[in-house]
Length: 103
Length: 331
Image (cartoon, rainbow over all chains, first blue to last red; front, side, top):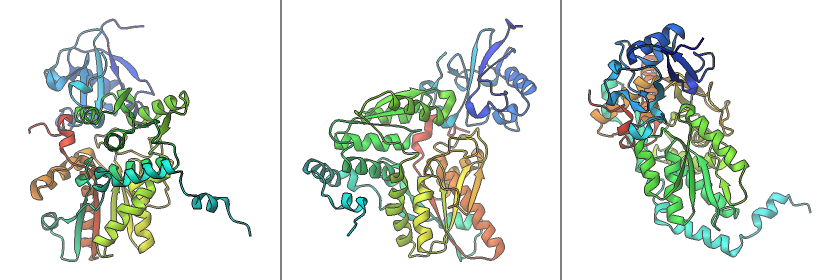
């Protein structure tokens, strides 16, 4: 059953082995931190790929909310709302604004 | 007498137009600036690692190429070959997929030689790379940022399949000239600059051309250990590198050649890059850091075993190309 409070998270190819091959998954939460926690609950192993031991987003990982890098917003505290699109891209292929995925 | 057809082909002089294009290529200032890069001994790093006198660590400073990376050699060999076979130089557009440096090298050479260049790059490639390609006048086609460099490979293959003869697909992942470039330039330079002393060669794996070409040359000269470097995980931030177990395997890769494949964590590559900048004063890219991280581990293993070593690692490119990637945000 679709969850109308859920947000779509776009998963890059190298992480799809944690999401049973899915390129898009639905997760609910009110900020980026809770989204990442719930992603890890639902898809064990994903969390440690994205965050370091201190809980911060790893340096080479870019998280986008509607095409904006959360480093330019409020980081893990960035608020999210139902219908938002959240993207995860490694920095090897990720600049700042010009590297934003299409929202 | 029977003469193999390949010999006949080799003896035929190129048509005058082709010979003229090849001569123009060899005269181009930017072409003449490629290669002969310094081999730098990292004495400060050796001291920090506490290495004994009989273990040396050297870095091949490929960022001193005019396009800023080792890929200038690859692109030159591929373009020279294509012009020689009359596949490029009379109006055709060179096309390839690239995560960055090879594209910059194609764009640079295309600008100097009057060859149109179209590059397929992941949409999320760093801002510096996109703007550099634009500065040289190359056309850029973006592939899905979520599919990384393999997505760019698949897109360029589709574009080539649907196009006519006006495109020359350079195909750096499968083009034997990528290997030949390093067999005939990078490898001999390292052998000569080390006075034949090199014992270990460390090269990061992307297209794998450097290790396949320079490694094969060094192996032909003597007993040199070949160490390939890849990201420890499929999801990583070391630009240009491939995690071979999960990526599209380049056609030029020969798994039998390397003695060892080492996996390096992105954070360790980054730390080694920062260490190089702060103790030696060379600001390189993270793939150089990956090579140095592997070289440092190797040096320490040799020291523990009481063995001598002359380690040469590849310094793939410079660091300023990565300033917008988040790796260098202020602490």
